[in-house]
Length: 506
Image (cartoon, rainbow, N blue to C red; front, side, top):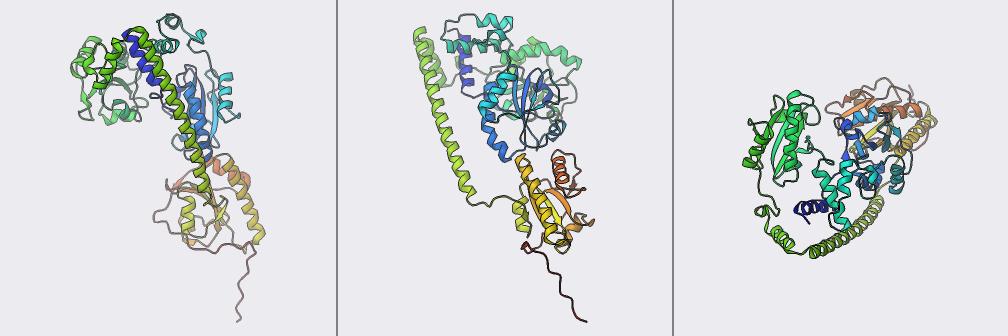
C-alpha cells in the first residue's frame, strides 16, 4: 500500500475504535452552526434527572451511528445550563425530544415516538437520514468523491473503505478547520505547539487571509506536534479572546507546549509561504512516518519497519489479523459493558432498599428540609392552620400537591414537594415576605440560592403552570435572604382535625 494510504488506514483504525469524536452538546452560541444544513434530532434534558439518565445509553448509541453523517445531527441541550434554548423552543418537561428539519420550522416538532434504541433508529432512518457517500450508497457522493470511491487501491474491502474516507478528508471533502472554544481549548492544544488565529467573522482582512490559513491547516491537520486553529471572537471563542488579550482582528498568536499559557504575538508574514516557513522553523517537530522515522518512538519504529519489510501479501494478512483482534476486543468490551450495566442495575436496587418511596412530605425540621431539598429545586407549600378549615381543607390542598408532584415527575421535572403549617415558621415566613396569608407557595434552589413566589391560586392548573414557567426561566427569581433561619421542629400531622385550645375561666 502507498505510504499515504497506510497513514490514512492507521488514522481510520483509531476512529473505528472510538478514539476520536464526542457527543454533541449544543449551547446558544453553537446551535445555529451545528444544525445548519442538517436534520437535527435533539434531546432537551435536565442533568441528573432519572428518566434522562435511563435514556442516555440508547441516545449515545444512536449518536455513534450518525456522528460522521453529513445529513443527520444527534445532539442534546442541558436545560440546567442552556436555559435560553429550552425556553425558546417551548420545552416544558425533561427529557423532551424535538425534530428540526433543515427545511422545516425553526421551532421544531415534538417527537412522541419510542424512546429505546431500535425505535429511535427506525425514526431517524425513515424521516431524517439522507444519502451519504459510501460504497453502499454512491448516490450520496459528489462527483469528486465518486471518482475516488471508484478507484481500486488494491486493498481488501475494509481497508479500501478506510482509505477512501481519509482520502476524502485529505481533499477537504469531509472534516473542517479546527475552531476552538472555551470548552475545547485545553484538550485541543495539550501537548502541541499551537498557531492560533483570533478573528471576527466577516471582517475583511480575516477573509483575505482565510485561503492561505486553510491551506496551512491542511498541511498540518494530521500532525502530532502542530495545531493550526481558529478562535471566533464573535461567537463561542469570545471569552478566549478576552483572556488572551486580543485587541484587533485578525490576531495570530503562538502557544508553545512548554511556553507561557498567554502565548506570544506573531508579527511575521501573513501569506502561505511565510506562515509555512515560520511553522517549520519554530513549531513543527518530528512525525512518525516512512519519510520521517526520527519522529517515531522505539515501539512505533519497530512496527513501521517490520511493515515496510513485508511483502504485499504478508502485509494484507497482518492487517486482516489485526482487524480480527480489534473485532474480538470490541466484543469483549461489549460483554464487559453489559456486565457493568447489570451490576449498575443491581446497585440501584440495593440502594432503593434503603430509600423511602418519594412523595409529598411534611416539613417537620431543618434536617428533613436539607435532606429533601439540598440537591434539587423544591416546592414548599405553607398551608392554612389546621383550625382554619380542618382536615378536609388540608387534605384537598395535599391532593392538589400530590397530583402536580406525580405529573411533574412523569414529565421529568426534577423537583421535590414539601408542606408545612403556615404561621409555625414565623421568622422564615417574614424573611421570604409571605405575610400575605396562607396558603403560600414558593420554589427554591439551595445550590443557586434563589427562590420564587407563586402568585396564583393553589390549584392543579395554577401550581403546574408556576412550576413549568419557573423551570424555563419565565418566573422572576430573588436571592434567598442572607442568614436564613433554620426550620424549627414541628409535630407530624396525625391526619385529624385540630382541637381548639381550652378557654381559661375568669
